[in-house]
Length: 120
Image (cartoon, rainbow, N blue to C red):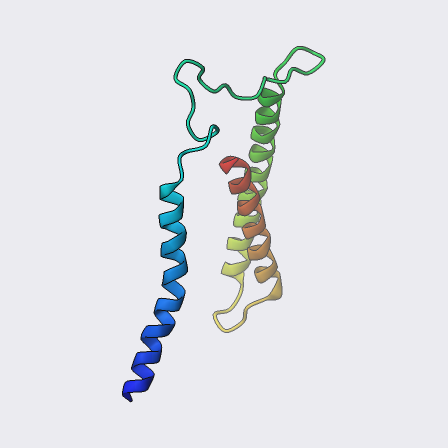
């Protein structure tokens, strides 16, 4: 490796790192804004809780609907998994049906949907 290519690699790295360091230093030198420094006398409150016309909290109803959908999806997931197991036992070790691959895709979609609802 020539001396010039090593040196240009160092210059290239410095060209990338220097702006990042300057931004960090500039951000540290600025005083915190009003939104970043909450006043101890007035603690922040979350958004007002929305009530539905029947008097129930919207958040509780959304959680209930998500839970019910998770139960339905998990039942479907169990059904797909048992079907996959039966078809896999019927198949030969040298033959893989497209139906098995489709079932795996459906299982993956269901698990992603359930995971997404649980994380939120």
